[in-house]
Image (cartoon, rainbow, N blue to C red):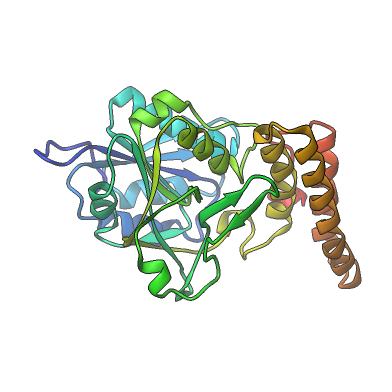
Length: 312
């Protein structure tokens, strides 16, 4: 259960940080799965980003002893997770587990993550699509900083031998990640200028540069409903906007060469042309507007929280 951290001779303490924003449609199933977790020393920390649907209460009721941190406004996943990270550091947890609230976890996922972790190792589980347990959901693999593209992440691919092998990674989604407190102290918190999307890619790169390790443990399994908090489905106008804007910001932040960033920019903008044409031909006006606004706002320096789901 998700109560106060309980003494356990060989069980490091874990604060499970779940950012919540108007998730009543799927909060109960998420909370019920957490309540069944068999790990002996964890606490659920709900960071509520100004919800208006009572979803934080649903989670708190199902997870006895869960703490609710109420934010005055929506700080996105970056700001929300940072609030949870601060709480974990203040309370002295050994690890902070970042967990999307549009997930359903398995009973032993946390024990298996902790078993693969140490104070210098971030660990992520196998994440499967909730509606088809044979398909890999979200990214865990490599990232090409020259072109700003994920590599070998298996997202959308069938689960199989390649995804059942433990391995070191260059990047992964913070849909679910076990982060040592030592990493938070040394690397610092997430960059809130992202608001959401790519903030974990940025943070993990900084962690790797400081000598931390990122490890994939396929024995730990959870299920993901894919962007449920941002409108549902793999790509939504909300996700299109923030992913477009933030990808430019991410590569600019880490690419030291002006020459290579200029090439990346040309590559990136040229790659948007087919999407613009497709959205125009299919009369997908919201998607087209989201993409164009993402590019425009990056060049205007409009970062952080700018637009909500209902505005896109």
